Length: 281
Image 1: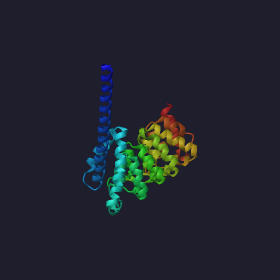
Image 2 (image 1 turned 30 degrees about the horizontal axis):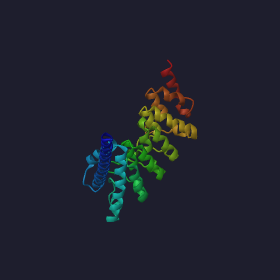
Image 3 (image 1 turned 135 degrees about the vertical axis):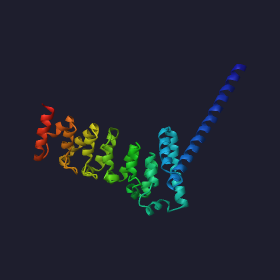
Image 4 (image 1 turned 90 degrees about the vertical axis):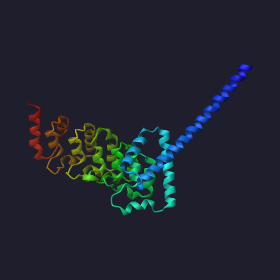
């Protein structure tokens, strides 16, 4: 009997320790959320520099989902607390042509809910460029936060066409590396007109995918062109007069040349002949 009583007492002590540990973990989440949230707003008002932003983004990326969710929830609370203290806090960015706004910070750190909350309050913030010539969607992509970029574009499809540094659009950024293929397809569906946008070198997303030898992105773009019938995009010349066929031939990308040899303008016939001789001698 004594042993059974001791067993129950032991289980009780174990249960008590579990509850204490659980409460301690919940308190830790709250402290982490508050600390990171205040750092976000500290960065915005100039307390910390871009190195602080990079550190914050790295730390949030490594967080477990529960901690990150707590940070986001607390960040939204602080957003409205800040608005309560200063109703013009989100308008301060209007006074500066190029600046890191709270939306830039939220997008850079992958805080999707916070970014959407700010966009809901100030839709125009999605088009504002920071001192590096980047919009919030550009920053979300560059930092690997595709879900954040997708969330912002769902609120305003034309964010896909915002021209940043060197007139590069988010669609063109998405065409650069094969780890952005999923968001590339999302962008095309959201804003079909973006396929014809040109950067400062007169290049489309197709030109960029070919130049970067990004087979996966090129596959998505070509598939979308076949589906929509926008074959004219393949014939756009860059600033040097090159179509994607020119670029593919010059870089010996047979997988690009093959589907193109049966299409294009008459002036490209000599290139098709060049391609044939180059790879069939």
